[in-house]
Length: 196
Ligand SMILES: C[S@@+](CC[C@H](N)C(=O)[O-])C[C@H]1O[C@@H](n2cnc3c(N)ncnc32)[C@H](O)[C@@H]1O
Image 1: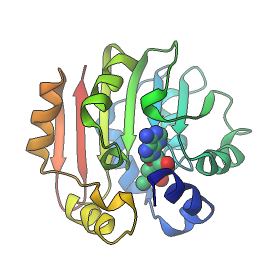
Image 2: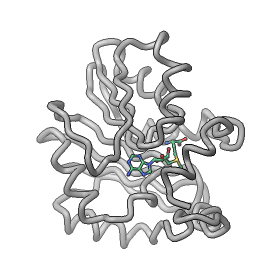
Image 3: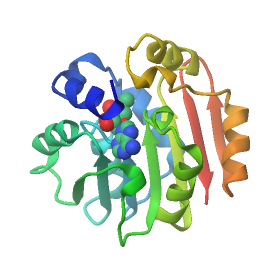
């Protein structure tokens, strides 16, 4: 099964099967340092798990693009948040095809980086979407071992999506012109924050 169909089929129960404890998301957000008025791309946004936390940081003058290629995920996210927040643009599109006039202060790949299989095209795209001082974040609230074992057990194209030891990811992002400002590869988190 292809990734898009896999996530579309799961969307209606995503918020029940995935737990994202508040303290763990806050831990990640504390590493990111987003400011009031920032523009943020929430990449692979799904049902919008981190949207309220980004909103808290950017306030009503900031902007969010919630992007996902699984329309069922975005539909649920919209139902939850479109009346609550007026500064979110919900977009159904494949990230590799996504075009916009906005230069983002932050591109956040929360709990989705392994699913982007063409890494070269991925980093090029992220680079093109960021403003000159923009920051790029890859974050998971589990260890890479836990994430990899979850993906291993799934019978779809997802089972090839793996997280590497973080030093390998650091080398990869550096080879694409990013500067690493924070990294963590622990029992509880896998986080990389980079400057463009
Ligand atoms: C594991 S889910 C995480 C969703 C959300 N960030 C969360 O933590 O609940 C990964 C998401 O990435 C999306 N995704 C994967 N590849 C994508 C692509 N090429 N373009 C846009 N979205 C993509 C999937 O549809 C899915 O919703």
